[in-house]
Amino acid sequence: MSEMKPQVYLDDRPAEYFDQFHEAARKGSGWTYTAARLVVTVPTILLYRVTAQGRRNVPKRGAAVLAPNHFSQADHFFVGIYLRRKVRFMAKSQLFGPPVLTYILKVAGAFPVRRGHRDEKAFETAYELIDQGELLLVYAEGGRSRSRELGSAKPGIGRIALESGVPIIPTAIHGSAGVRGWKRLRFPRVTVAYGEPLTFPPEREPSRERQQEVADQIFARVRELYEGLATRSAERSGRRSPDRARA
Image 1 (cartoon, rainbow, N blue to C red):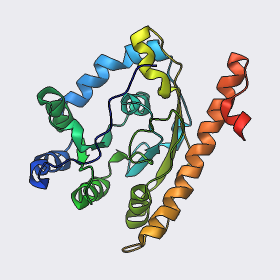
Image 2: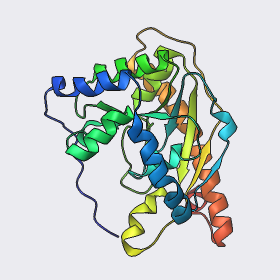
Image 3: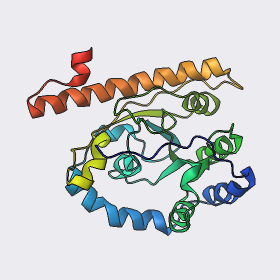
Image 4: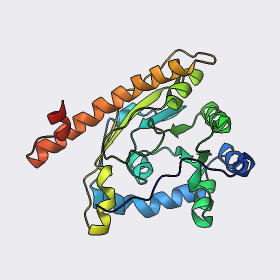
C-alpha cells in the first residue's frame, strides 16, 4: 500500500486570504467545472466502472445537500459524475494555494473551510448558496477517512441540516478507498448510492450536542447504504464482506 502524506489539521493562513474564494463562490460556478467534467468523465467511468444508484433521490432543481462518506480526493468526481446538476463543493482550505488547482477551484465555485478553526465564513457561504437553490456537497465525516473504513460524523452537517432546513441526501461511496492503487494499475470498481432525502425542522442556534445528534442520524443512513453496497460487492466477487463479518 502506498503511503499517504500526513494530514495537516491547522491552516495558519489569515482568514482574510480566503475571502476571495467565498466571494467567487457566491457569484456562481464558471467554465472550469464544465471543462473538468468533459476531461474526467469518460476515463473515470471506464477505469473505475462507476455506477450510481438512487439518482432519483437527488432533486433536479432547488437547494439540497449531498452528505457522502469520504475516502479519496476523487470522491468529488464520483459523486457528481452522473448528476446533470452542478455540484458546489465545500473543500478543505489546504487545497487553495497551488496556483493551477486554486484557479480551477475558484472558477468552479468551490469554497474553503479553514482547517483547525471555527470557520463561520464557510457556513455563511453554504447558506448563501442554499438560498440560491444550489446543490452542495459537504462530507459528513468532515475530511477523508485514512483507515479505509468509515469514520464518524462531524457536527457540521448536522448544523447545516438544522439551521437551513434543506433536504440532506445521505450518500455512500463504495470502492474509492482503493483509488490510490492506480499507481500499480489497479482500478477498483466504484459505486455511489444516493439515499432518500432527510429533512429536519429548522432550529435557531442549535447546541453542538444537537448538531452532533442530527449528524449521527444522517451518517447512520450513509453507513446503512455503504454496508449494502459492500455486501453486494462481496457477493459479486464470491467472498464475504468484511463489514458483514464484523457485524
